[in-house]
Image 1 (cartoon, helix red, strand yellow):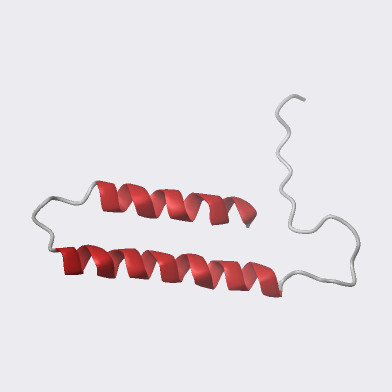
Image 2 (image 1 turned 135 degrees about the vertical axis):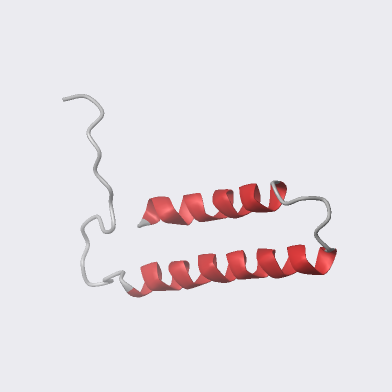
Length: 67
């Protein structure tokens, strides 16, 4: 969940960087606005899943690198 909060802005920036130069400025702004909106919605979703009564780690991701 939290990795997606880091990945979404990077993906959005890559999409904007790879757009052809023929795109109008208005079209680029619209794409950026949709990307920012998706990031905002995901952030709100993650924030609503946080349990303030739980003192333990929440929303952590565990990926063992070395077994």
